[in-house]
Image (cartoon, rainbow, N blue to C red; front, top):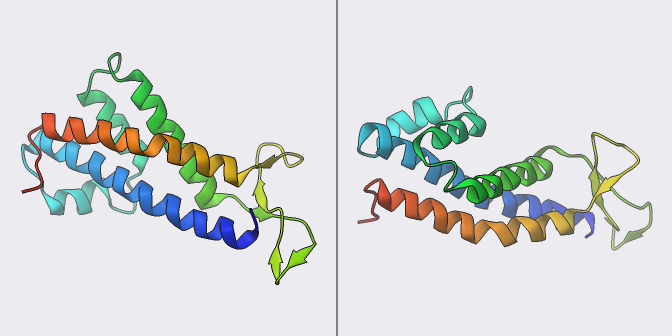
Length: 148
């Protein structure tokens, strides 16, 4: 990937993850409040001091962890990939094509000598996304949710 492609992929990952965060928040509302309360979502679950980690922990409390272990691991992977795309520095070769940095990748903050392949991360994200949305939609419906 070049620099521009990574920037575009950042937007794709962020946009898709917003859907995951929203579904988890709605599931929590349905479980505890028996309805969707947008003020609760905005003021409690999505306020600037809350995190997806908090919502994920609450989700773990309201579902069967043994039955949903693989799906929870996939959710965690998606969150890690989202964090890489959102927070990692991009580096690339000094060679440029049409003003773009070529062979761009993410800097690995744990080992600066290693790079994180953005294209592989995007493929993994996309391979897990649809099944995770389906799983969350199933929980949403089990909690009484519908899109009427």
